[in-house]
Amino acid sequence: MTPLLHPYDVTREEGFRAPLDYNRKSLLKDVDRCHKAEIVSVIRLTRKERLFHIRLLEQGERERFSFLPGQFVMLELPGFGEIPISICGSTSQKGFLELCIREAGRVTTMLHRARVGSRVGIRGPFGSFFPLERMKGHDILLVAGGLGLAPLRAPIMHITENRSDYGEVRILYGTTEPEQLLFDYQYEQWRRVDGVTLSLTVDRPDAGWQGAVGNVVRLLEEINTPLEESYAIVCGPPVMFNSVCGTLHSRGIPRDRMFVSLERRMQCGMGKCCRCNVGSTYVCMDGPVFDFWTVMNLKEAI
Image 1 (cartoon, rainbow, N blue to C red):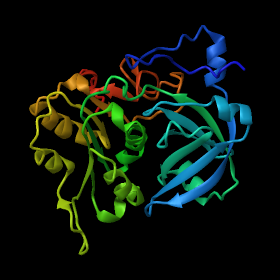
Image 2 (image 1 turned 180 degrees about the vertical axis):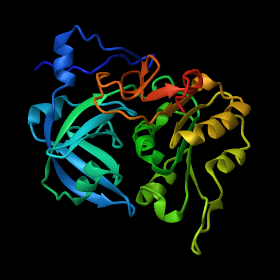
Image 3 (image 1 turned 45 degrees about the vertical axis):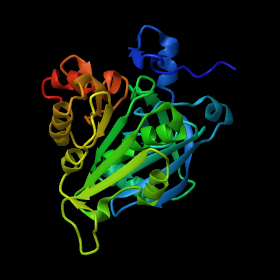
Image 4 (image 1 turned 90 degrees about the vertical axis):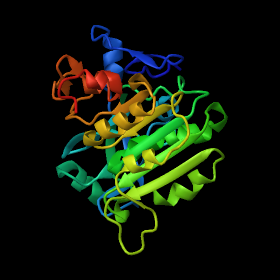
């Protein structure tokens, strides 16, 4: 059986991707194909976020479908529209997708009302990814703010499933309030993995909060070990990138060893609609994952 073609030709050893050639119609046909899928479970994470488990209906498509941490899919709710969503599950989970969706607009509101068994459409996967192959043998900092833990969850799961490939791993996560913390049922599981630490902070603690108070930069400032040979992945609102990456750079991490995931107005996933472009760069094709040096040189990227 011929494997499903990826939207990018990937050189896995280097973590780079070759842009899609739109004259190659066979490739365009595959990435523009909509897979029929159904919602198999919904988990309420917070007041606004829910975790959807989605299963591709056709067995052949389930066997061929694969993604890399950091990529996204276009999720279609028939009759209401299509939205880009980062894949937040494990790459080892074949045929199933985990998508963390915040209720924020028309499509997401209707998705939050959808029941188990509802049919949806999946296109993709699209975009660049976190170069975890390049990070092997090194310490890794995984920094998230707010909803940013959703795209960060895929690399966390990949690293914990392949623990011997990496050095010390630190997960730093901050939100505005304790009730906004995502995936809190997995925190102890991550902490039990050898060489993995998880630190949490909130801006506005409630009466029961016993952790750190302040933004996630405070957690970075408490690390007292050398970071020069580390890699960093930062996910969250773009407003946090300058402060977090600036602190990391002051600790000796080069900007091209920090990777961020940009949030832009993506609509097609294929560079056709031009809604997500920053100059000649298309976030849906050249991103959403960029090293921070590239982001600094993209005017108005953040």
